[in-house]
Length: 239
Image 1: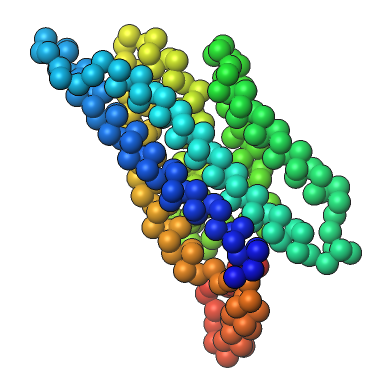
Image 2: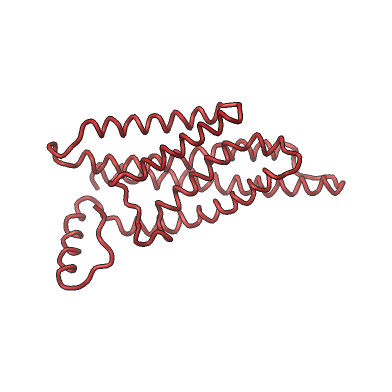
């Protein structure tokens, strides 16, 4: 394996080693938090520690930031591994600088979202983070699997990251709203996010099987070209 192949493993390695264990921890804390709340509402004494809600919030924030961060790493590899591999005469220095600025602004917006206190501030920084993520994902170097968008690792990942950004923006309202409206929104959206995480695990594994290592890529692409000359092709190789 060449250096570029090891770099390509950073995104899936972080997801497997760090993000997915966090998902299990956060889900466990969420179930304990809900169980304790229901027991107290019924006037029962709960054996679950009173700090479980705080731990759920803390680990949930870690999870949300990690998912957005891993998505940015994946997009960064997809973009710059191809931009920098292009011949010098085809490289656009201004575009590379703009992409770097966009990455920096997106990361800065995420950091500011975590420390913002006001509702409008959190909404603004969440919007900027989401816009940055979408703009980076729209770059031509990113393989989006548009012909099978319903099983696309990219679309699942962007949707999950957007839900995590939204969770970071609304968490104070969850604790301040006595009607539990925001809490119910949080529960529903994060159940959807959990399904997306499962989809991410499946589609990510599939994509790892489909992406050849660097020395194999020219031969794989030639096989596609040869097959497309003799029969219709429904799937094209990654560029």
